[in-house]
Length: 220
Image (cartoon, rainbow, N blue to C red; front, side, top):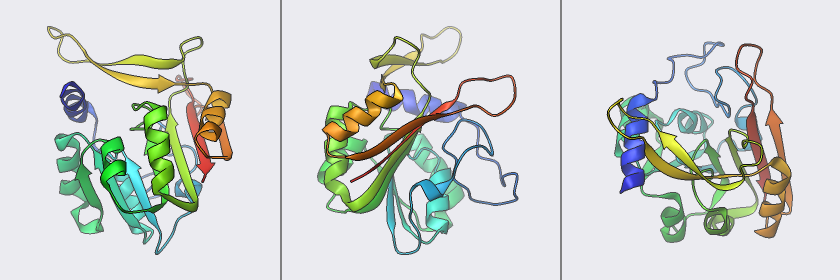
């Protein structure tokens, strides 16, 4: 229940995706915390007739782009506020949304996917020893797992506390996240049956902010 409250609170704070990106596109894929920066959906290697699962789909911007590519687009999120926002904006895309946590959906769903991804989402906020085996079982042979999140703070690895602020007179809400350096993510993925794994930090674009984005990709 605490995590659901935290993510509903986060949904209220997170701004809506712009109507179009810098190229004038109404749907697009963004792995980083910066607009118009970094690679796109080509990381997933999916297209018409494929299927992709977004773990922690939030307000559905990336999932809408997957649907626009002609793939079956399935999203999972624990936050009703996030899913309502996704439905309000992207109801005509054909995306399929489920309100549940990632591990439970993977355990209970009988559907397999060509790609599973998470953008600052459930892969960051779920114990990899629980989530990665569940993903592996639902990923088709040769399928892609990809995820992104902020790089870890030096010396702070493994399970960490992540804070979602509220009003000044309320304590922040706390959720768990799992932080690892790129080489350690590769090792963890190999330990869980993903032999072809890469991880790199995408530098921040020119400007005052310097924190990059950790992007991890693996094939089953």
